[in-house]
Length: 363
Image (tube, rainbow, N blue to C red; front, top):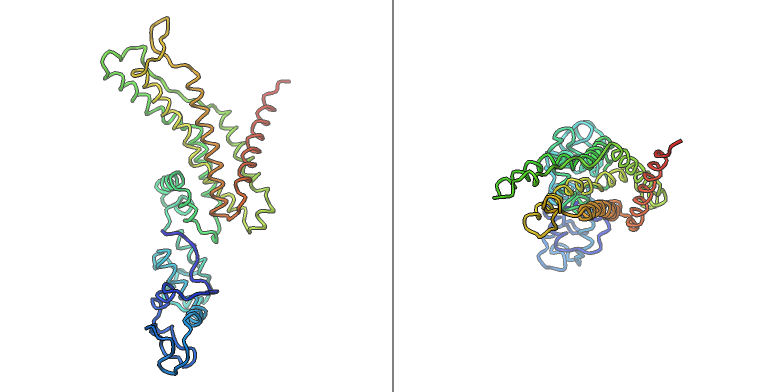
């Protein structure tokens, strides 16, 4: 689906060729002389062939848009936003609204808003987790991860700002990322562990007991609690910027949507850490690492593993800050989102550390 913006503006100041083409696409007979009603075919003349008055295409286009605005919205939603016409239905009775010139449903008689109809159509056609979490959870989750990690700008262009975010799937998305972050290392180790040992077994002279690899889980239950405390502290801090939300007309559900997508890349960092550690271990066969004096086996200093882990945690925090910044700028339209994101990350980390210190005291 293409970028969601807005249909033809009501305050048009310039009659462009694109505007004229869109008006003709809706109905060629809409471009009429405002004096005698003669159909203007825009053939380059500067006066009406019927009554002879001067033609002002800007005023003619503006009048056509003002008097047929609902039809232009339908054109925009189907041709620009590329929403299927069968999905543009009444939100009350599901009657198809294609071809209507008013904003009242002929089936149930209820007035409708095209923005709400568009949002409902997006929910049907969009494959993001928030919209398809019940119908197709695995595919929509994979799609959300892929778009969020590889193209966050596209992610926020897909979400319309006028709709109401759904709390239940967003909370589920946060919990899924929480589990992926906490157990990502162990899940990846289940695949890498036999792969690395099979790799050294096929190399001549290297498949010795001293070269066996064992990758185990690096996170305990305390880390799950710490991550949960950080998530709660960060989200609450984002919600505390009430003044910014009022100024830019932002709802707390929209802030929840931004936060739910801000940790997509960060949740994969522990799994990526396991992969990079396996890559580091594989250099034992190709680089002149120092040997252990006791058994002459090559060893990699612990500082390399610790540095690799710190880099991954730094990447996680940096990615969350960037994702929050992009969400605030492109979706919430708040210009100082970078500062809000930085403060929220700091407060969330500080809250988690304070709780850890308090819980570790002995009496």
